[in-house]
Length: 67
Length: 557
Image 1: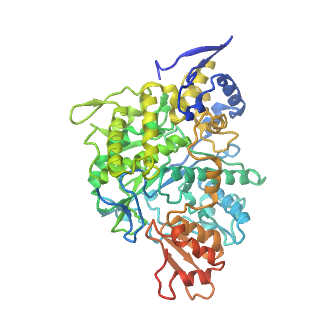
Image 2: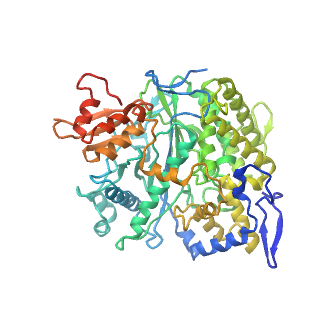
Image 3: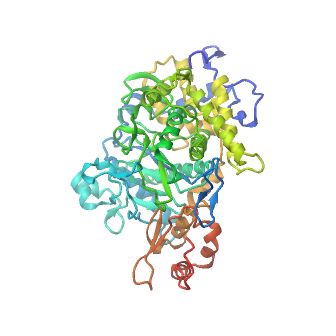
């Protein structure tokens, strides 16, 4: 996605990937992606949901073969 | 035109568009964080067992039924031969009932582990269930697998596939509530990023009269490129993720052949397993193994809808005449290029992008849909118009306005979230937190799964609403034989001793032997044909009496 991304200052010390369209003059379904201000908020929420020890958790996820 | 699909009995789906008998199979990644060395087959059996306990509570008399293997033919090759059992890889022998009995468990994993497990009354761990919604829930190798009931259109495919995620969730909740067992997480993804992949398969019914070579030629360029619409996104390049980065598809790096029978080794772009699970001289079941498991409903919808359209093109002899040079390498090129600008070489010398290929198929499918009338927004078949519209809309967004695709295309949504982390925290692609975001994206628990966090904020579009998915957990589709299978189980569960895609087996007092009801026509056994019969009877004996034609009427199923 190089070249597709723009950065937009959202607050003093945070930059956010501007992957969400600003004002979609778009079909109703595009409303789903309309909220720009929620990105910081979203990452904050996900911080609280992520398993605590990333390295160990990812390493321990070992699967046996499948189709 | 090749005529309508379906049986000679009058049941048929409109041809030329996105309607077709189809179904999904999802193998879930399974992990117990508090018991990381726990045996995966054992844990998978616990998942099935847990769901059996859930449904026993729901349906008095028991909604669990064992699988009937009579018609499984995993070594039949669509190209016209059968592999010798001795020459087959053990994982190809899927027709042997994997009932994990006490002795086998004890031999493999030790007595103590066995004693931790809830076993059913017969002393075996349940490895296989047929559900009241017509689906199958079972242990496939070392993963729990949900195989959706047969549906006739991509919208229903999304609903009954998503229902499988709720089935898994119910089992996970049940296990989490059991203090004697470690909690188990299920992930709707396709790799552990340590060189192992597990599948999410699609099945499509096709007339056997279509030459298999046409299917291979027509589908290969489509399968090389469709990941731009329905790839789920993956952190890491290479089977073992040894190269840091992000790619479009979970599965692409695991494919090594163009055509073949295998599904676990030397995986082919076109799989030739030929078990029709239906009248064999009329139908083939096209077994598609190249897809990613999708949580995004739009990606999932388009995965089924556009593939069905392309199969209609192939049946009509109207698939675009395209041949991709070295398709296995091209598949990986597409997956590794998130800018979508990589050019693939065609055998005729043209160089095109994956999006170009998708537009070629779209154009051909739109023309066929118009010519046959199934694509009309008012008088069409009710599905094809929407698939074509959404397909064009997503391709246009991927062309011109990538950000807009983040609410629909799964890999774009995941990448957008990962880029958020990379920007905010300055993370390299090798950072474990990005690997965790990728993994946890697919956790099926809504409070932990990152896809579900985005969905709850309306950042992901829905194709079917939550109520329809919840209903699909217990109700079968009305318009295929899955209706008959599911209703038999939910209505007469205690008298059903086995079921499969093309049969239901009863053991009813008063009958001297087991009664096997064949359901070899996928578009019979529908609500329209058998709904009234289920309304009339509360007991299996008179139900079977009428169904099996003691008055010499032909079976309705």
